Every structure is written in structure tokens, then in C-alpha cells.
Length: 140
Image 1 (cartoon, rainbow, N blue to C red):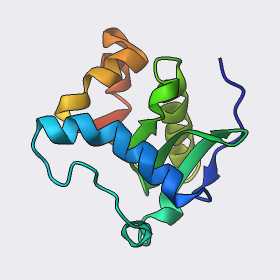
Image 2 (image 1 turned 90 degrees about the vertical axis):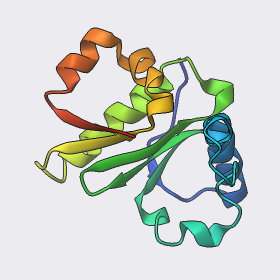
Image 3 (image 1 turned 30 degrees about the vertical axis):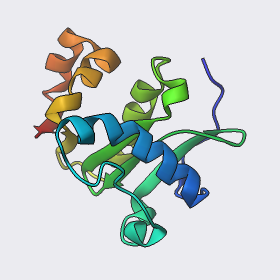
Image 4 (image 1 turned 90 degrees about the horizontal axis):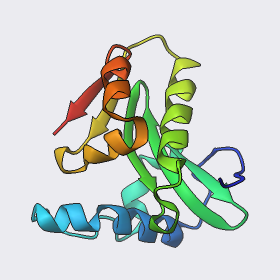
């Protein structure tokens, strides 16, 4: 278990975020032949998004992040060096709570079909069925 600082709005070194984001999605984008395989290549790509990106840090290390756009959760990532330690679950639960604090609208979680196995790792199959009553999963 990692002791983590609170989530914060995107205030990190852009190059660190770009590197971790691209590492997290590279395999999926390559397998699905979605080019460019490394999606982010400049800070200007985040100008319209950065006010909605929350990061989880431990000391000087970016552990993961999530984007919350109104009632939608997207781009949940966990630094590959820290995957399979419960951080994905922690980030997703934080995002749900953050949205719930601001809205009663149904929550939409965007998940790529290629990566839906991560949901089962985070919550388990039976928990997903329970969670589905509270969150709409947009799997594409």
C-alpha cells in the first residue's frame, strides 16, 4: 500500500504526465493500430483538458491520474511501475466521489473494450454487476 498525497488538479511536469499516459495506452493503441501510438506529443494537446485532470502523487512520483468531465470519467491511468497494487481502484473510487460531490447526474465511465479486463481486476466480476446500477459504462 502506498501512502499518497491527496488528488490535485493537473499541476505536474507535463513531460512526466505525457510519458506515463503514453506508456499506459501504447500497447492498446498499437494492437488496435490507432496512430499515433504515443498520443500526447505536446502540452498544447492538454490546454482544453488540464483543468479536469487530477493526479495522484507520492512524494515526487506521479502514481496515476484520472480526468473528470462533468459526470464523465475518462483516461484513468496508473503508472506501470505501480500497477496491480490497488491504485486503479483508489483512483476510480476517488473520481466517483468527486463527481458525486458536485452532481447527482448518472456517472459515465469510459473504458476501451480492449482494456475492460482492468475493471475486473479493480472490482471483480460480481462487483461490476453491482456497480453497473450506479455507473453507466461506455465501452468502445
